[in-house]
Amino acid sequence: MLNQQTMEKLYTLKLFGMADAFKEQLQQPDINNLPFEERFGLIVDRHWTWKEDCRLQRYLKEAKLKINACIEDIDYKTPRGIDQSVIMSLISCDWIRHHQNIIITGPTGVGKTFLACALANKASREGYRSFYTRSPKLYYELAVSRGDGSYAKIMNKLSKVHVLVIDDLGLAPLGDAERRDLLEIIEDRHGNASTMITSQLPIDNWHEQIGDPTIADAILDRLIHNAHKICLKGKSMRKKDLKNLK
Image (cartoon, rainbow, N blue to C red; front, side, top):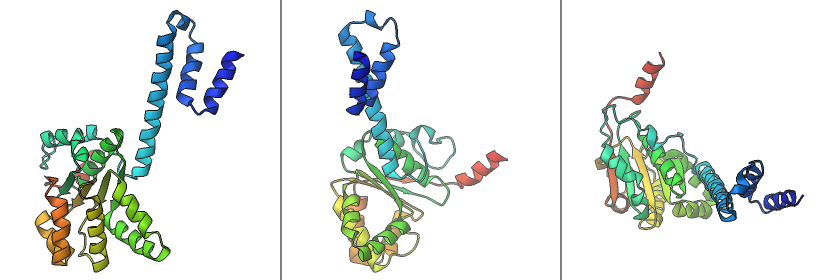
């Protein structure tokens, strides 16, 4: 009876991992052979693991990654310019701690989005909050937010997330509002958080695509100088995947 009351109290306190561990111990006949401290330690470890799993699932849900990609699944065999030593250095997430950026460029289908999502997934697993968005969707949502009064709220969210992934930057020349929004986002995050950009355009072409020379200079100065640059090349990975399915 006492054990049942203890279980109910643990669930009421939302100590679900601890409650499950305690329940499992009660079903193990030899558990009483262990010292109290060791039994209690096992219960605490189980609750810690449960909380970490819940945090990871919450972070991954908030990140809204386009692809459920993991760094363990990165293909190094297909020749497309991926330096495994560079990726291994990024896996440590020191670039996030130092508020550095990552820029991934290359033709369509070569795996830019997959790589970006894999690195963001790793960031979430290391306890950093990530958020993924495609640049056309980002500009659209910011334009709509000006009308419904949520602009400041969205910009505040974008400024605080540890890793912001902006996919497909520069698909079309930027309008005045779009380049000003991009400048505000990069300015708010500069020196405070990390930004990951993917683009089909080489970095040398970004200035022209942004448009206004003054704004372009300001964006690129804050974005590029402390960035890890990954230039992918080769044929589309989608064609390779289709061949494997046949």
